[in-house]
Amino acid sequence: MPTTFARPELLASPDWLAESLSRPGVRVLDCRWRVDGSARYEFSRGHIPAAVHLDWPYQLVDIDDPLPFQLVGPTAFAAAMIRAGVGDGMTVVVYDDTQSMYAARVWWSLRAYGFESVKVLDGGWPAWVESGRPTSTGTPQTDTQVVFTPRLDPRRRLSTADVASLLESDRALLLDVRTPAEYLGQGGLGPRRGHIAGAVNVPAAHFSDNSGHGFPPAERLIKLLARSGVDRSRRIVVYDATGIGAAKVAFTLELLGYEDVALYDGGWADWAPRSGDDYPVES
Image (cartoon, rainbow, N blue to C red; front, side, top):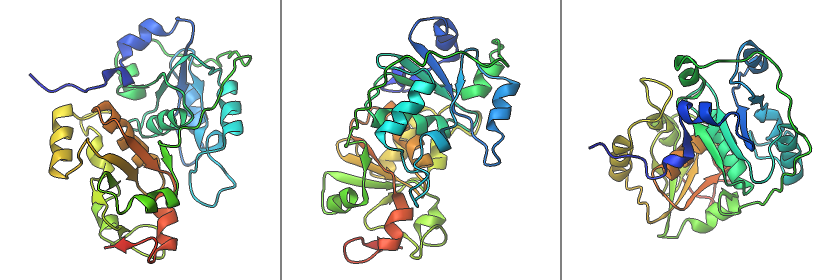
C-alpha cells in the first residue's frame, strides 16, 4: 500500500472544498500571480465561487525592504487579511495555478502570524476546473468587520542572525532548495556564489509533480529526503533566493510530518552580500 502523507489535513481536495464553500467561517483566497500584473484579469475570467483575489506580492510583502518578497509587518498583514474577509477562528483555503508555489507562500505567511487553520487546495485551480465544478466571474462581497489578530511565531521565520547562530548546531539542518547550479556557485544572486556553509541541496523542483499540479507521492519524497540526509528529528531551516520555492518545500515537509520547520526569509539574497567569517559560504 502506498505511503500517505502524515498530515493530510493540510490539503483540501476539490471534493472537500465544494462541500465546504457554503459553511460559515470558510474563506477561499485566490493566490494566482503573474509577473506582468495580469493575475487580477485571470481572476475576473474565472475563479472558485466566493474566492477573494489576494494580490499577495503587494499586500503581504514589505515593499520598503530592499530584499525581495520579505513578509510585511503585523499591522499591514492584519489589514490585508481583514480586507479579504479573513478573521480569527476561520478556515482558509489557498490556491493558485502554479503547482501551489504561491499558495504555499501565503500558507506560510498565515502560519508565520499564528493563523492555525489554513489549507492548500490539492492541485490548485487546474484541479478545480478539471473536476467540472462551477466557476464564477463575479466580485465576491467580503465581511470586513472581522477581527484578525497577528501572533508572530518566531520559530517559523528566521533572520540572518538566527541562521548564523545555528551553523554549529547538530540539531539544525540548512536545506538549500535552489537549483544545483546555484548551489554549486554556477549562478544565482549576490556578489558571492555558492551556498551557506553546511547546507544540503534538495531543489524545490523535486517537490512538484510533473504530471499535474498536485504533490508528488509521499513515498517518493520520503526516499528523496532520506537520501539527502534530511532527518525529521532535526530542526529544518529552508531557504532559496526569494522565499517562494522555499515556502513550497516548508509546506511539503510539514505535510510529510516534519514537526520543526522554519523558513529563512532573507535567504541567499541577504546572506551572500554579508559573506565572511560570520556568514560563511561554500561552493
